[in-house]
Length: 239
Image (cartoon, rainbow, N blue to C red; front, side, top):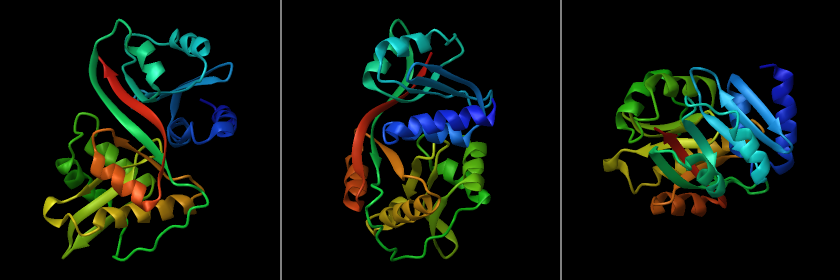
């Protein structure tokens, strides 16, 4: 995949940047094996090691044209709209499905200050973070280590012990946020999120994230910080 093709796609997708935050981040952060355009719609698929597929489409005919490029090995799909989900799952069995709200942090929104010392994570933290994750089906230690090395992250330690953390995924979304149970209720989740917002904005990025529909506490947290809900998205794996 030529870098020029990726840059051209990103320039086009930025015309509707908020809607396209995930696919823009994925194109910029990853090696791609496919980048296909139909009219004003795009399909982006990661390399053999990261075969996730992202779409940008608001046109049903263009979207169905893009689907003609899929094969039986294409099973992982990220940030899918509800109407797109219906097409992807028609006649197919779903292995797992996560429904979420996407939020972004407005470009003109002031970033609160941090009250606690927040540090960047190290690659040595990846195994511990994985051990505490509830998403072991879609994460690996290697993936977490790579994300910590390549992008922004934040963590809080007490006496050398990592007690709260967050990083960004390979579509640039904020994620993998976790606070050890015995340390919750102290505002640490807010602190590490604010740190990520500041780091992302310093890189010229619009901070964004997805919260599962059922995770009401997380939604209240990010809305309280200033994130704005902009769309419903789904993540899925087909059998």
